[in-house]
Image 1: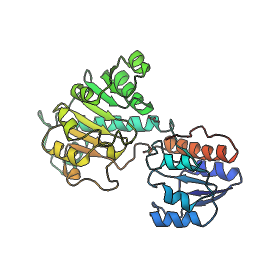
Image 2 (image 1 turned 90 degrees about the vertical axis):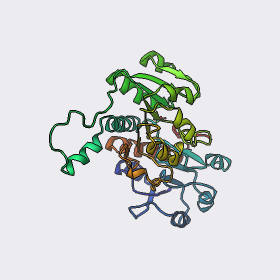
Image 3 (image 1 turned 45 degrees about the vertical axis):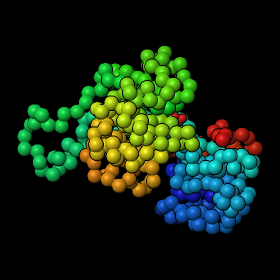
Image 4 (image 1 turned 180 degrees about the horizontal axis):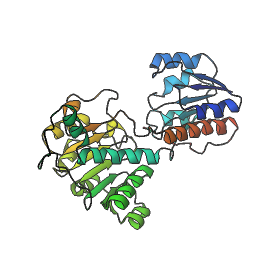
Length: 322
Ligand code: GLV
Ligand code: GLV
């Protein structure tokens, strides 16, 4: 069996595939392959499986370049980079890596919340610039979380874990919005369910986004909805960039429509919307929410296991459907 890996992932996953005796080719560059480079690489051999990243758009052109591949195993929980409907039509299996990164991403969302509400990045910069001349009775006042309301958009694993940390650790009130109710939010976190985004935005002091990127969630947070948020509220996005209209967000932040934003993902990654990086009420990280050793190792294990299952004629546990 021949496997192509589009960029180096943790050794533990590569070793699992090697131990099965598969022939493995890995993109030798320490960077994302361009579309043409990926197509050329896939045409080189009749690969049986491809382990791909969220940075690789996988569509008809890619499937045509690699007609022997039976599986595209995405090294990510989000799989909006893959045309799953087209894969299904062609009998190609697509898998993702749910669960492995839940804690890491949730903890990162909380880190962004804390950074914003306690103005950590701004204060750090102030100190490093030599501006600290003595204790400030009115300097860097932030927001305390206890008793405030966090609005979770998307009640999946990650959304739940963020809510759990903030409820059980910080005694925040939890509100959540999803297309369906998940009883554990009510029973474990005394949460309030909202079946529409607008009502959730109106009651939340912190809004944390955890929905997958779909046609229906693109620009879920837009100009109109930003205006529905409390003027003192913070927006956190660790899901996918296009869920938030980034131009509208920059404008809302400039005009104090909301208090601030913590972003790990961007609409046109790696580019940032004009003006975003100049704002002091924003904390930004380079899509590193899942960047812990256990999370990345766990993702590598799941992606490799999905390929092994497929090669052994089983249905991979993390098979996704359009
Ligand atoms: C990371 O962004 C993922 O979807 O796993
Ligand atoms: C992550 O694994 C999620 O489904 O939220």
